[in-house]
Length: 158
Image (tube, rainbow, N blue to C red; front, side, top):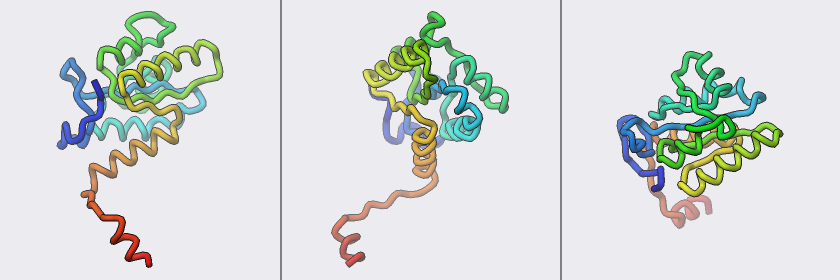
């Protein structure tokens, strides 16, 4: 079941479906230590868009330290229930996963990415990409979009 649905919750601006549990859609975040200092603004924006935050232990601690609500989930290697279980159960609608150069972290990341792909979940593997996507979603909630035909735009440039 795809997690992207246009206009499913116009009041929050979220374009993502609620999870099967009836809760707000969840964004899963697991980032490498070098990226943790840049997570606060992104986490706040995801909350503004109506996402619940779910993160692995270290990432959740960095987010919670900033006073942002977040739930902890196990990494795959830490045992069940883990993040891949949540993805398969339809509990995750957006994934941000940056990886350390460690074998276990790369194995976890691979299972997260492949499961996310099979479930059609939007996945970002860099903070820069995630920031751009979230900023784009925020912009879409704050502005009215207008349709232009390309011929008219080209005529104005000529």
